[in-house]
Length: 383
Image 1 (cartoon, one colour):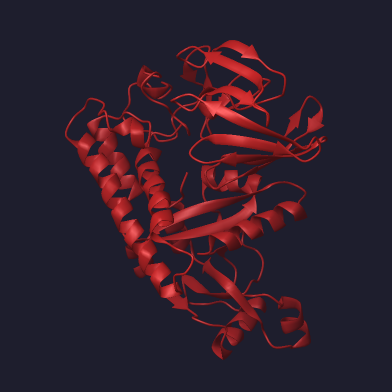
Image 2 (image 1 turned 120 degrees about the vertical axis):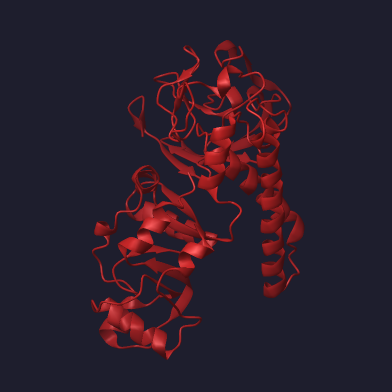
């Protein structure tokens, strides 16, 4: 994006939080946990610490010597009552990013205007609420909304707990089998935790006191039921990742995957490719971003296993001879009968296809090849 006539580039994590920023002065990195903790810059060789209040709003920024450089105070709706700044900072009320031009907060799904105490767009989850522009059910002292989405509350509860439990259950000295079993147990326990949040809010129409601690949203009984059905967190799911540019990631999240854009003959044919390996997707996003001279991002899909079981699938467990023959046919434009094909990706396409060298398989990829398969993928986007 462009700010004050200068190009500014951002790198986002899968939760659409800024983790790095690049401008004409260099690169700034942001260190995050459940909230913004610190930032450092290469050019100035500076390191700043963020101090936040109970809802995550930045109240102070201090340097390495503990000297207060910035100080902020806000009213209940996020209007700034006090702003003393010696260093630039874009993360303020509830730790969210303030657009310096419009003076609105970017909450990922939409923009929030603290002056009118309303969102400027409707909630992207179109439930039965009386006011789809309302911020935090008109109770910003008790609730926060980190991403502008009503339906994200149950997903937030599930994925927040899953991240916490994964760190607790998985250790460095585990074997691959032990790691897989630990992660599966973390998923089960995270689901149970999110289910308890749902049950606590299922029987009443009034806000439940447990909700803000998990997801920061207040919802009616009907909205909870709809959100619970939409998230499908009670089902066994397979998580897929797609690394691409930030612009294409935003388009996918807004409009879904468009199979008509699959116009290249790839390993398993023409289709939309994802991976089960988060690190691989992140690496691809950085490579694609660099190639297009922009930033990269990762789109996440949580696909129910039951939906995948209903499709015609083919899985290659290794880069064996059958896999090589299938990849060569796919690279040469052959059609396939399958909805989904999974297996290693070809790391040496040029020498394999054109120079007839042995194929080299790496990592993991899954190709969604038919509209039937892509439709399921579009219902599973983590927004």
